[in-house]
Length: 428
Image 1 (tube, rainbow, N blue to C red):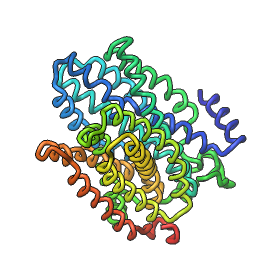
Image 2 (image 1 turned 180 degrees about the vertical axis):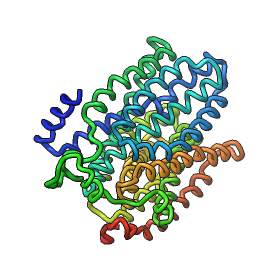
Image 3 (image 1 turned 90 degrees about the vertical axis):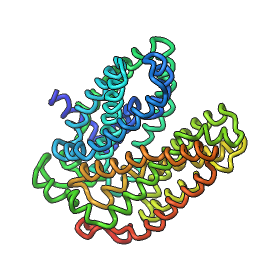
Image 4 (image 1 turned 60 degrees about the vertical axis):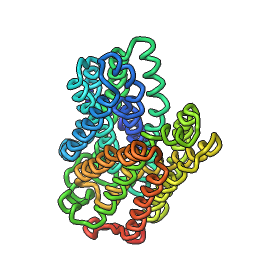
């Protein structure tokens, strides 16, 4: 296996910069995280509720608690990625994610379901995306935004494929066996490229981020010591920029989840037919796929703080815009803007942490950042849910929530790269 792997890597590396192979593997990994994402779970809620005789509210409660529990473990996974490298950790993640799918399909009661939810969220939505983003952090620098945006296309494809595939499997073999197929397909899709193609860092094949070569021996520890720089997690937590970025990520994750979770309810309360509100998701997925490379290009070309602020302002625009939707045309316009917002959100996570804090300990820093984002996602739907329960509409609440990303966009103007990382202030 080692000989075959070395031969394949050498052959591909002679033809083009090997980092683009990592983009392909990481994109497949983000796609394979689908069984742990909300858009897949949503298809199964009704079937699980009927089979296990558990209310939808109980399922939602289990899902929320499991998401929080999984989030708390992400910093530890980040440290494992730093210690063992993406290839080893992603191998374990893929094996465990497939096993979690099988475990979920065998759920017999509420407690079992909650544990299975936590496993899928941790290994799918959390760890798989974390490991793939770590690869992009090591293999790209000047073109990291574009690379991360291409990787993130896997999420848009998953939104288009996994719900439809899951519905087909439910109708064909039932919801339990559907999870068996999802688990097996995860193993078949990801284990070969993870085991054969992944190279943790470009220095292992005498290269550097973006394809800059060095006259060094492959696998040299000396290369790692001199070329890979960055702050520790402890040092990053002392930097003001960490908290500005964390606030922005928390806000985007919180409010994007709010709009995903309540979209049909919000539009229905404004007189929009439920089928139109549902089809808007497909429009958003298409818009996200189309605009993702543009967002990545913007991060590579322009000052980071301006592009980060632009993403936050798009989020504010979505919160304001959704309150003005009153028919099919305005629903499409809103869905297009929301797709752009999703493109910003997916690209921001993979780009900003190595951009400001370097590569050396990026796994643990990304893990902490993702923890903050997932906590935001778990809390996001609550304000709008309360608004519906108390006053019957969410328009005012959504407009008030739009203030949060505007404040974070203003704070983004103070972003600066820590001196220890050695960044160029002209790019901040």
